[in-house]
Length: 473
Image 1: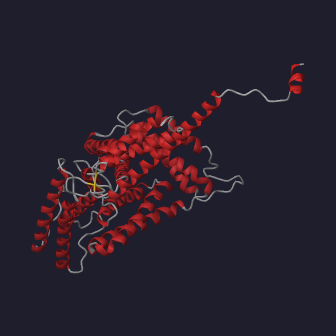
Image 2: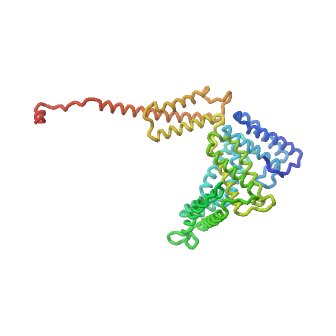
């Protein structure tokens, strides 16, 4: 699983720590592969404590030196590599058991965010939406780390704090470029970025569609036609702030569309193995995204992340080399960078969608989510015509309610994490079901009252004899 040619520790004491960490990592990998049993908190915490103990021992040996170099790809040792794997696996295990709001769970997400920001900086093609999502998540992670500080490892807190500070710094640099855009150019910039990425998507499809790429090229040419003397101007003819930024994206998009139409998705044979790896990971993550609620175990993401990391870190001076040491041309480089960014984006999305519920309770939680969606849709469509229509929902809810033991959802003798989330969702479903039943009863009463009124005989109008005679006349 590890990248080769990583130097081993020269200090014998560090080698002892490395050996112990390798054993812990291998134990975590075996635990990850076990599909017969649910992952339990008590399985993970001892391994986490063992890793922290080894880090503490190494810190004492290195005194005040930082055991983990944050400059990825520079002076990385075997210890750093194995330690990274341990923390990455532990982080995903914490998500798997539902402890998403604790500091260890933040490690994997910060790694993915850092990769995304590196690629946005390198590609220099990004929109405000990209930064807004990441910025919000970084703020949430800062809160998680801050709240976890009193009862977490100082080493882990320091590492996460430094990572988050670096992410915040990169976000500010990226945002400063977008801040130059005048308000009228925001939509144009967003559209250009969207077209650029759509072209890149078609470029990596199994079947290349020339017609679709030409349609996108026509759209970008329509945007290009709105320029005046190569600039974006307002109604008064004044050049808008940030015109140079949007023009640069527009021109890159035009050149990229020409290259893609010329190459038609054909990758040179010497770079085909890397391309196949990246496309394979992208396609698998795309499938997982569609079925994540029922099939995803967060620890599964480790293998995908490792494959992507190995491809990303195999670059020399920012570019990929073939087996003969020849660098990839611009077309190949951009295609690989798009696939990397897309795949890391899927990882980011999947981690964000992880529910703070143990995998032992996830089937029940998913059933309740489905029930809630059904009840909400029924209510939005006008409710039910009778109380009897709610029987299937009521029976399912009572069936889930009966699974509790002393008010808790148990799995054997264990009380899995996420009790509050499952119980809260169950209460929401019962509330929706009750509201629909009340509405149905009210509707039935109203209909019965109406039928009763219509069935009652109408009395003839009352009046004196003179009035009746006049009426008869």
